[in-house]
Amino acid sequence: MFIINKRVIRNFDWITFCIIITLSLLGLLFIFSSTYTVHQTYSLFFKKQLFGILGAIVLFLVCSLIDHRQLLKLGYFFYFLILLLLVFTMVKGSIGMGAKRWIHLIFIKVQPSELAKLFFPFFAVYFLKTQKDRFCFSFTDFIPILLILALSFFLILKQPDLGTALLLLSSGLLLLWLAGLSKAFFIALFTVTISLTPIYWKILKPYQKKRVEVFLGYGTKKKERYQIEQSHISIGSGGLFGKGVLQGTQTRLLFLPESRTDFIFSVLCEEIGFFGAFFVILLYFILFLRMFMTISRISSPFMQLFALGLILHIILSTLVNMCMVTGLLPIVGIPLPFMSYGLSNLWITFIALGCFNSIRIQKR
Image 1 (cartoon, one colour):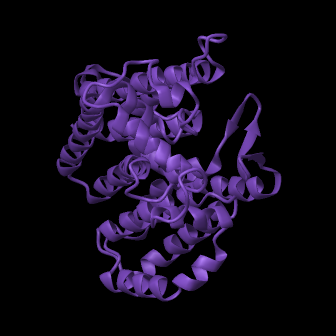
Image 2 (tube, one colour; image 1 turned 180 degrees about the vertical axis):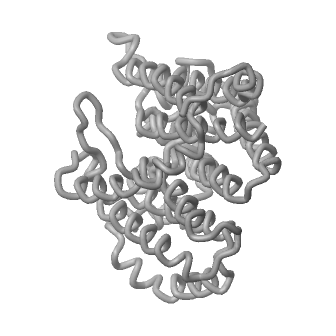
């Protein structure tokens, strides 16, 4: 099951590993900055994230050394357990910020919706692989996967966690489109979605409606638009070179809400400025470009699909978060991969890239 030899060390993607460690350490730096106080230099959030990064590195290395075909099979069966965890979360989940999203497992809290994001590609690709040897499917082959995706979306939506539910749905549908799901299905889905928009609007929670209204320009700066306005101020006030670490006034004076989580990119822009933000965006760009180059060299279409599924939610999360904090998308509570505070999201991201690295090592 584990593969350890000279070839593994030679084919290990050291550049990707260095990039994700750099991004994680930058995130740790700005978590430190956003939670620093005179009375407590190293906050509990900083300490937890440091522990999380160390654990994430171990998970990345372990997943890199396991045969990806075994990972694919295990992940398929594990997804059924995740569905049970999502149901359990609705009944006995831990409430935080008005939502039941976490369950307690001995010493840590786990967010099953994050696990669903990671393991849905395992389920979808393994199911398709067991249906046919050739990469050619009919619509009926996709029906069980679509039903499971719809069930997962509904269970996460009921927590409520609209951002993660939409992210899972988007990455899942994109994966199925790449697998060959017909264009007619997506045209029909788009038509139905547009026609039922008034009904969706009535179903939304009041705070979710406010987020959409704020995105459309409604609300006052001191109430509904407060969070996004403070984010804009943080980003704009950083200038070209930033105010310096621990010198961001929006963070220091507690004007910017959720600075250590969803709005960590705003903190970064304020403290290291345009050039610092450009460097971080460049790191993400290089990371994703290397992954696409790796995928293009994989011979098996099933493994190509698996590799794409592992990184789709990371790419979408990065784009959505950066667009969200700059006002290009509504605020939906999607963390920035590697950088935002949160152990569940951090570990899930490292596991996904560890599995991706396993495919890369064995491909070569």
